[in-house]
Length: 126
Ligand SMILES: [Zn+2]
Image 1: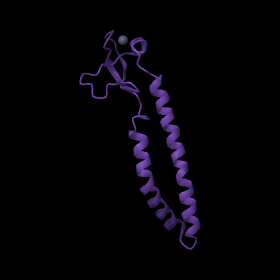
Image 2 (image 1 turned 60 degrees about the vertical axis):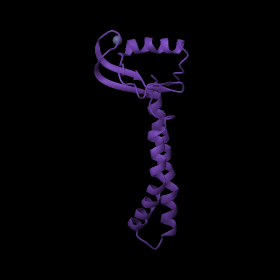
Image 3 (image 1 turned 30 degrees about the horizontal axis):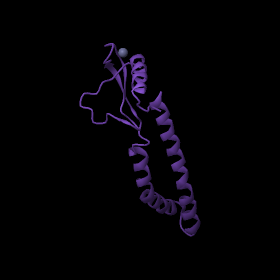
Image 4 (image 1 turned 90 degrees about the horizontal axis):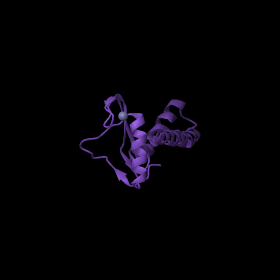
């Protein structure tokens, strides 16, 4: 489902972002040849931290990347009343229930049906 794809996208972006720290580490190790590897790595990590704090913040808080689904274990389905793993669509490009005061969770089956209903109403889910 959508939430899974979002998480995979976020994960791949995060793995890619880790690779970006490689040239910083390599560069600092190169320019600090006279120093110990530990000292060089500490400096590299300070530089990396200064930069990647902002990159990570973006990865984990951007509305474009944040998972669109909220999932809770053992909740009562808003439609059929079953106690099951509950799904709730939080946000898409033209749908926003981020500040919903009474969020409704649905079991997987009812959630699928609800998605079809939302798509019929013009909500972009993918
Ligand atoms: Zn249900």
